[in-house]
Length: 361
Length: 78
Image (cartoon, rainbow over all chains, first blue to last red; front, side):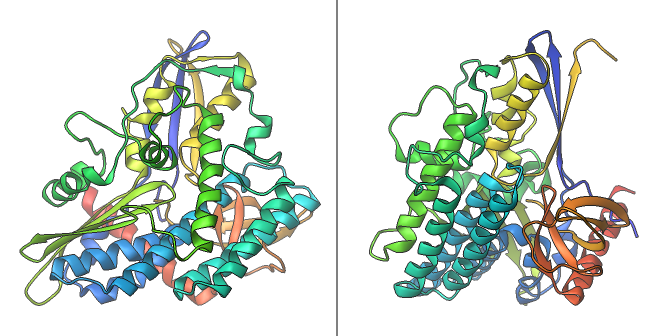
């Protein structure tokens, strides 16, 4: 059997001396979900999603269910929406935390046990969140995560502070300097345009999305821009990872306090008429979209999805804009800095990174 | 988003490492984050680490589904 999937993004960096002359992105294979889901009742597809997307199963299922409801012209009960928001936030927290440690640390015995405890605590949190439980059970789950983070960092997660165990501890800030680039961010305000184009243009849009010349960034850094009036001009790995730690602290506080208002737009549904609907879910990597059309017998006629990675790793997108024209230190030092920057754009994307001298065949 | 392709553990190595088979291709990964893995178990891998152990029947269903996708992709490009 050969699945023939390319499940990681290929990034090729072309160097001209000590600067980055060009960057090429080879995207992952996109599963042809439309061809397989067409003609099926929506309920038969729901169990398939966690099998395909196990790292972001909650976000995928919530986006799917919300889009189905929107296509049917139905509104989920407020209690259901709240339970879904809690589950999405818990999964986002898990992905952000995992991205800070797994694959970033050379784990020794102590580190391994601490990360394992953290992942087990995250599993408990996911179970509690999926039941919609708040109060005591949620407080206990959040406390376990905090304790595991303190064991790794020797300090609680707080905005602006990153522990010694994060990739920040070894980041060489002098190994990469960036050109000043204008930053653009995907937001809830873009949803209506995105979902309409997703249904009308299909794969040609979702494979390389662009909004009237804009290819905005989505994810942690974009969410930070939505909360803060001004962002640091330095959008390098250190600032991005600090933003991730700050978000972990914020999400822990939110999950622990049922009285707080949720973020705006964690889940947004759009009824588009004629049995068409869409939804957006703010997951760890950024905004995830599902859009669909149903026929009169409630079967799927069209299904499209757009992953946040398609914006951030677009051939002319935020990562490429950040890298092109950057100056980097010679040899492994510079290459390591580029690797850290790529990882800081997305908490969990798999990628391969190759360097070539421009002009060399 | 990343597809979750199940990998079968084919060999346990020292230092919490293992060899897994993914779609017939062998790969060495860390199993430091999962306790009590054995040959024949299925895991979901992320950036070189086994993240979760999954039920063999669930793994088979997932692989069947991915095979369907693969066949659809090949039809689409022909």
